[in-house]
Amino acid sequence: MAFTDSAQEFARRFNQLLDTVYDADAMFSGSAMSADLAALRPLAESLGAESPELAQLLWLQFVVYSKRQMDDEGLPLGLRALAIRSALGDLSTAERCQKHYAIGESALQSEEYDTAIEHLRQSAHWADQEGATLSADQKLGIREEIGYALHEAGRFAEALAHNQQLLADAQRVFGSDTDQRLAGLVNNLAQNAYELGDPAQAQHYLQQRLALGQALKDNGIVLDTLFQQGVLAHETGDGALARSLLTQRVAIARASGDQDLLEEAEATLAELAEREQQSK
Image (cartoon, rainbow, N blue to C red; front, side, top):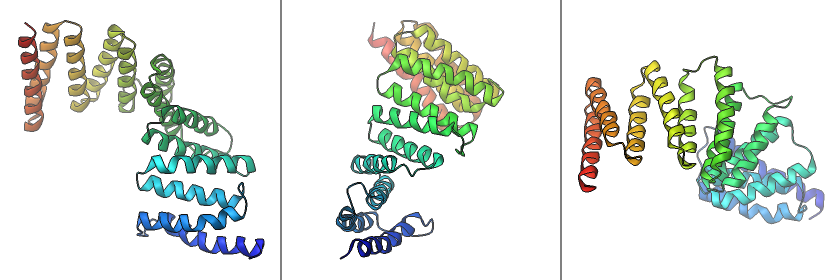
């Protein structure tokens, strides 16, 4: 088969698969689609180890594996596809942002945190360039994921510094320090400080999160934060404070009228009492 004929045959078969994968209304078997793409790979490779066709095929395989939650299998394919496309120099700014983000997300799922950090940072970089289409909120979201990946990688000091800057930037973008979107970020800062062995700073951020939850009248944030504060107080030897915080949780849960919340809060308080008794 001539080179031109091979390219045309590849395009014909590949485009059918591509259209199916990206059709929001299409139903297909993930395993069968992976098999069809694998069967097409020899033809793509015959067009060149650095060919656009091979890059297209590898990327679609990566996308399908991601949909199948098989990121360990898909991530190497996505990385190779992106490397080929980057070498060809035919990616737009928006495409660079999107593809690096997709790789970063897949790496998070595979717990390949250093890889995730590298590509999420690349995504954040391209998101700030002319031609990118992300909103300010979306850009902050990428940066929050970088902070999460740094923490999961055990790079706690980097995570703390990153998230502190991100918090200041997010407050400026949102125009408020009591926006619900800040709750997760403040919680991440508390976790960073805790892992760095700084319970006082962790408590500072938890108190900030509690105030946020109270201002928003968000029982979910309030109850979760009181729980974390109670655990921290128990771990640092302040049993009276731990009991007080978990007792507050019971009162708030009871006032909410949610029986499941109340049972969980009461069980947590009972567990604390049991632990204290065992430690005597």
